[in-house]
Length: 545
Image (cartoon, rainbow, N blue to C red; front, side, top):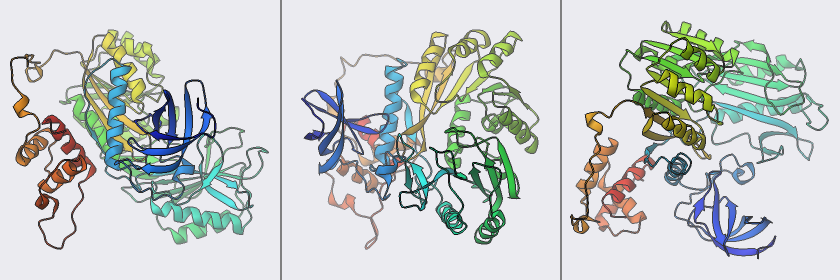
């Protein structure tokens, strides 16, 4: 029987949705953060419950093939990058499996997702960050991130997920606070001034916003801070205070005050120019969001004749990005400020076929359905908790759109909601995982549901393999056949060198010449993650692995 502080040998066989590795010891599941499937470990047990236990890595006896160098000095304490210790190709494979399993187990939908779409960038992809500011045990100001399940600050101004200049801005502000002896917030006593720092960057415009969240109404020596920031960083066009005196864990208050420059910064997403305040919702991975929204638009099959209902529309970016490809967009959002932003974004971009309503999604859908609205396409982008069952029934039974496109940050609730829609006459046609948050345990999912008849291009052909001898075909494929399969299925070209690299990674024999670059004395290029996934798919298709 396991006890606390036991030291055991453990092989990791799976990974949870929280990115914790899991192995079994005497029939007991043991969860080990920071581990990878295939790791052989010495694990120290730190907590034992009735049917499972938690452990920490003492020694890596034999590392998993999925392991990669973790260059962040605080990743294990911070916990934000829970997948930084594995390769990006393995991370994408894990996230693809999460989506597949959620739809199979929760939704009872046995449809293989399309190959996951990786993020265009794996580092420095975030355009916004919020940093708690506290006093450390040594009395010095700490800026960083909260440790998992705590409010203990792990000091880190230079997070690899943020643009490097974010760290430079934070360091300057930290020096300013120390120099002028500005007090920082203490949660226990509710005393101290500076609670958080907020940075936002318009990737396409280069504009930068700096906001200090304070437990008060004024910042002493604000002019000195403005002078320092604008001299060092000319791209800063907005410096603001956000006043939050509430005894709460909510970071931002409702009151924003401009100290310097503009109240907003600009950016461009899918060709739509947007203005962003500290309170505006905006995707933190702009280039990843563009990929996500393009996939959603492709799933929608727009012809220019459709009425599109965009539920949970936020500031309207999804609907507005599709407005030029539909007859009309109706957006619904419960947050009043977001609705105003959506209207302003439409006006700013000369989009005249979009209107926005301030209401909860279920209530608005019921009202619109009673008024006789029958949209051709419904786009759903709900919060992590997913959609209200009543909303899904209204859509399926009263509105009855031809197609529904669901974008979800939680594939478990997406699977549940898709199952409800299937009970109301829909079927899942396409399923796509999209990685918007590399190195973290988050993945986006895009789902296409249809009520229409199958087209001739989607006729299912059933036949028996019993009378066919396919054993001679298994495990054999030329490099040209593999290349052709990948180009047809994924629309990308791969080299013989890349195929041989992945075959070797799978323990398959390849000729020595296939492991070398064609150019003498040149470095051998490494297969990119998206091509590795495509090659792995082809090897499985041909029965090679």
